[in-house]
Image 1: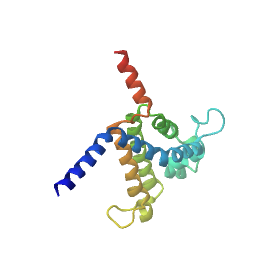
Image 2 (image 1 turned 135 degrees about the vertical axis):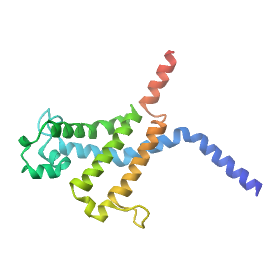
Image 3 (image 1 turned 90 degrees about the horizontal axis):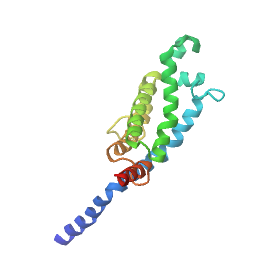
Image 4 (image 1 turned 45 degrees about the vertical axis):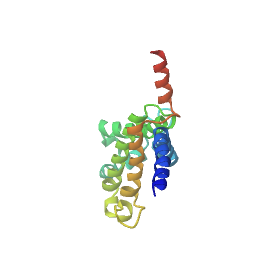
Length: 187
């Protein structure tokens, strides 16, 4: 029995020592493999016409982010204020910028915090703005037999992987690590 315990400890001590680079690398890969194209595609649907389309989002962007407000004003953008424009523009930019920062591993912890906040707001919009709260398949439930609820189940995984990046950083394959090493060599 002691041999089995020693083998167990030796194997898992080695894995534990590798966790400093392995866990953040896998978490960043997981976030990028599942969310990079998802968010970039979503952002492209919000971009308006022309070169300034990113800062002049489409009507669909407003309808996606403020569905009930847009319905209330008859989809007339002229009835919305600066607040609505700022939120939609910031949301569109965030869908491009935050995943790009995670992709290259730059300001990873801040980008991951931003993504967590974005996911919380997105989830609340999906639930209350788009009426997902009334549909159990969309809302989902924890500790049930179905692991496919869009909001509670799926987004918990997203936020958990992003939390690893907040706590551990981007890992060795990142601009954060290169910049940290460069700064350390200057001292």
